[in-house]
Image (tube, rainbow, N blue to C red):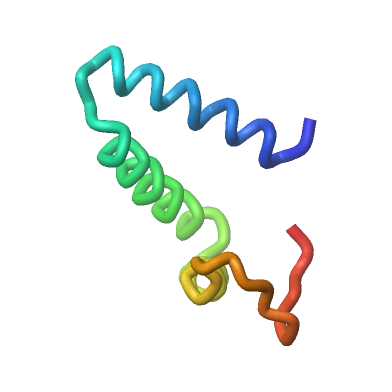
Length: 72
């Protein structure tokens, strides 16, 4: 199982739990993102987390940045 399959399963489980608790799916995803960012800060530090987030935000449209391709 790759890392994305593993995390996708965890997200689905979190969304199911949120629905059972009456928590909006969008709010649950936002909480997940905030928690993931905080965990990334503690594991990888500010510079790496910032670089990752800037890269992801600059590619929200789904276009591939051919000048900066990195392995995932």
